[in-house]
Length: 314
Ligand SMILES: Nc1ncnc2c1ncn2[C@@H]1O[C@H](COP(=O)(O)OP(=O)(O)O)[C@@H](O)[C@H]1O
Ligand SMILES: [Mg+2]
Image (cartoon, rainbow, N blue to C red; front, side, top):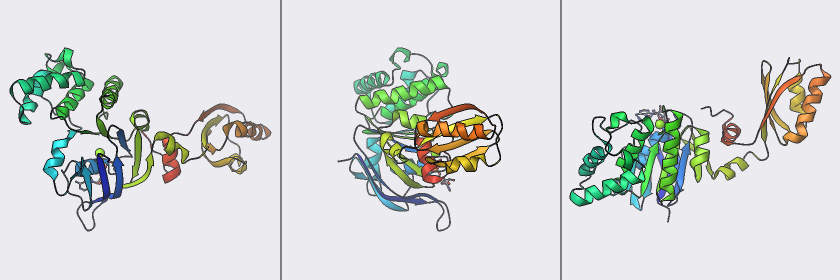
């Protein structure tokens, strides 16, 4: 059975007229996978995480986390989840080990058991060699890894991370993503949220794309990309844009959309190999020259564009 089963989950803030932040979400998370919720700001990611953490009561629906209902048995749910908050929640003037010991006591661990578990967690988040250093000497990524360590102390069955890489440098981001992949390889289940397509693509076994509170697509990266069929995106620049050129491009067989801004055009095409020569011909006939061209394979941005008509910008 899936470790998380979400059934018709909805949240409306300030009913009856407030925002419907999550609208009838149903999905499941399999044991041992990294499942990402991908969506723009305001899509409902944090609201979903807050409900699955029993910090926010759903307006409708329920979810089972490790077979415990978030409505009927929040205490049991809290005991099986580890939550990594977006804000750093560790003490800067204590060492990494001292922080973990402090939080371990909060979870009711003590004595040899506490020391053993802290040692294990330091290994899990690759901070064993820095355990005696004060946290204020740590990089953003190391602090975040320590935060993950705190969330792992009570041996949760699933780890939730809500946009953990927002506002940190690329190197720290890299170390967090590697840490999450390593945890998954050791058997941890992860629920991850992000508005960065590239992260969702790299990390996830499966991805749910959400927009305005609705899950608009769900699957592996390969399955999601198949939604847009064979379409590729062609970005090109011309030395000067001719009158009516976009309209002529749009009429070419295999071109499903074309938009233009100054000398730059963006086209969705079935088969770039077949279409590109025709684009060059059309431009040359009018006396315009294509000065740069870039073809990108379907990706999650294209999926989002295809489903919503809007770009999912980072
Ligand atoms: N406490 C709140 N009260 C009222 N509206 C809220 C509250 N928190 C979030 N919202 C609204 O709910 C929607 C979803 O927000 P959120 O779950 O934070 O999205 P995300 O995490 O994907 O950016 C947004 O429209 C947001 O403005
Ligand atoms: Mg959020």
